[in-house]
Image 1 (spheres, rainbow, N blue to C red):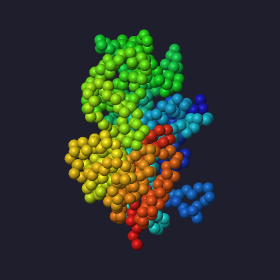
Image 2 (cartoon, helix red, strand yellow):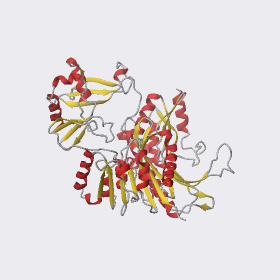
Image 3 (cartoon, one colour):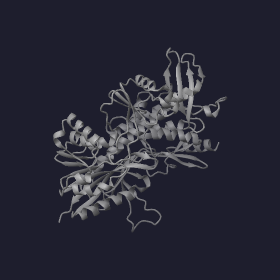
Image 4 (cartoon, rainbow, N blue to C red):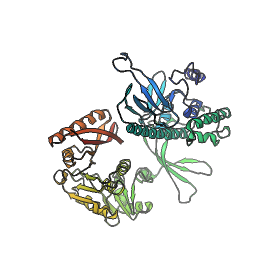
Length: 565
């Protein structure tokens, strides 16, 4: 009952200025609908929130600040629309959506955290499980850039305009994630709004329209206006008790389904869940979609278990490249499959509609990182590919490399060479690679994209073959680290006014700042040893993905600028 009492007290004071402790003193208009949907659920209520904001903050200097906390005051803040250039000073900040939610229990907390992470709020989590279960909904797309101190702007107007553009982009990304979270809640048992709230929504939308100046409506606003949250579309929410079902049969997910030959019943198998929530299951269920009956059955010799475990039915468990399907290395490892011989592979190829079937192997631990892929069905023709990281590939392709010379020290089959040439319009790319198979594929890709005349392929160890003093930009795309070729990269850069290096690493998330400082100092030392008087700065660190628990795949953009005077 304590949860209900706290929720009733909090909701009764929600929106009251005398109890709102925030500097603004009221709820943020863009997320009122979202907060209402959360608060209507019997297992949740919000304790604090911010829709996301762009602000200019004034903070006291260290000589005038109190010892405990520096504090500060807002000179400008907006939560509803992009900002226009004005003559502000001090610190420009962007902060994304953050909501604190008290949950009835840990299971409820896990549910809303999962929905938040799926919507892009990847830093969401349970912050307290003591007397109260508290969840934080948040993400990391924040920004904080000092502009100067009172009376002095230490950066140019053009740079401030650039920062404003970045902040506006982050605000738009925050809005899209917020809309996705809102829709995720509606699709997973969170109710809509009542008639009275719909009237409030109309008033909110009028206010939002006047603030936004006719900007495009968010998905939250569209849903309310279109009647998607009308009283006729939502059912009353009430807790229910489930009797007679053992706990190991609850919280099941990730099953696979297919129709039987007669098309009248559906086979449901595999899945995860139960007590451990992530434990693998070997369910075999037969569903009658017309009558609703669900029968449990088992097969002799556990063949059903093996079928569940091995046959990939979804595109994220195998790779399809033209007429060839590549199975993951871990598939079909049980010895029971050996009894079927080659008939197994022809059956799998036929079921997947593939003319050729192959199985991936571990990349060889040699310097050339050779592939151990095995052809199982079809002729052993040409097949070499790399999915890589699409976001980083697109980022490189979006750079303006016109009239630039680029050196790619780890070219491979052209994963970054092609974007530099085809999309970024580089004048010339030196592609260093020592795997002969990769070089053959690289030439095929260059010719297929009609850019072979702007690429010089250098076969062998890049520490011996890379050019010197020619590059405006050097790319080092080797994981887990490319440090052995840092000196080679410095030597490849020209002595023009500005040069760039893009370096890829895997690092523990707690070591990121230390790594950036080490990178900057190390490149500076290497430049000095080569007789270069360069200013070294790390202009951007791209957090590409989580490579493993607490291990991030990072890309650093290092700027090398020739000192003047």
